[in-house]
View 1 (cartoon, rainbow, N blue to C red):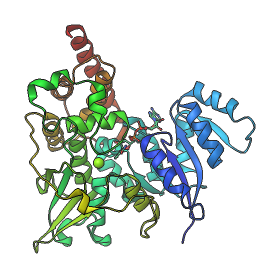
View 2: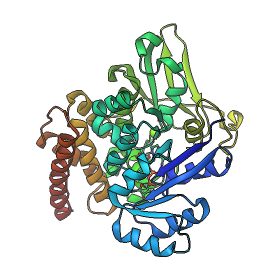
View 3: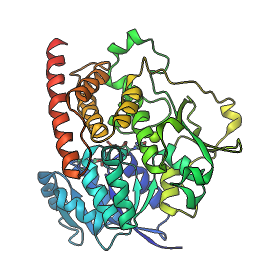
Length: 396
Ligand code: NAD
Ligand code: MG
């Protein structure tokens, strides 16, 4: 057993806390070297007292100052601030495994830094890969980093492909990936009612408990759109070979179909501690604290096709991937702005796809040749999407 030294980027979030729950069960196996958060000082201070990391980072400068005060009796915990601090947490020689669980584009620089430093990178931050797909995967190849998917669907797919063939679908005999989706809280809602849904309704996911941004993404099916793009990059497969299956029970986390007709699936309770434990211990298996699956209690599993008329975000994501270049980064940026505005009550749920569609038309895609180009298109898209939000908020 190799003892692993972890950095948890986004430690106070839903994935970060689930990671630390798994770590807590295996003190012999894991030590926590670095924890990071954005601005939640109290939550970080509590985690630092428990795990006593060498480094604690607050992305927000004033929050770092407050954390330093709060931890003045723990001089061995070095409190750092901002992007430089995040980068140190991601690349320090004291770290071999990085959980990339910051939400959104904000996580790209530190996730990429961990990749470039050749760490084992547990990828929850799907937005980073969606934004920079080819450059990100090139960086993985160049550094020899070990990239393990934590998104439950991608972790399921990863578990269903032989280890040496993860990025060689043809050699593996893979004919299709069946990407499952819960359908979110509005799966059965008529289109006419969707304009009136509230952030609370959107965040009340039927099966998973998650951060607010990804909860809204699940409700619009943008999450599945981002995951479609994520799967294309991770498994080096074309989107035509990926078919989204709405599966409301969220028991099958995805499937891989092979040339001989076999379909391999990974099943489990909808609990992120399973894919997290899989990534942390891979290729070994450890107790994740997850209750055993009771298929008798579940009884039946259902499948349906996604309805892209009611959920246009899935179609927008597929189109952006097809357009290529910087289009997925623009899609992601517009989505982040639109979701935030919806959570603040400034725009309606149905405005989210409208804002993204308009931004994709306005901000032309160019080849994604460098991270600078990607970040510049990300800001251009954000500016355009903010303007859409302002206009819609006035009309609302
Ligand atoms: P969350 O909102 O619960 O937590 C986000 C974390 O990131 C927090 O620790 C926060 O402090 C930190 N953060 C936020 N903004 C930041 C910034 N600007 N700079 C630095 N740190 C910042 O989110 P979550 O649900 O844990 O999701 C995290 C990532 O994992 C997302 O990319 C999400 O898509 C992905 N993911 C989550 C789940 C899930 O079940 N929650 C499942 C699959 C994938
Ligand atoms: Mg997922």
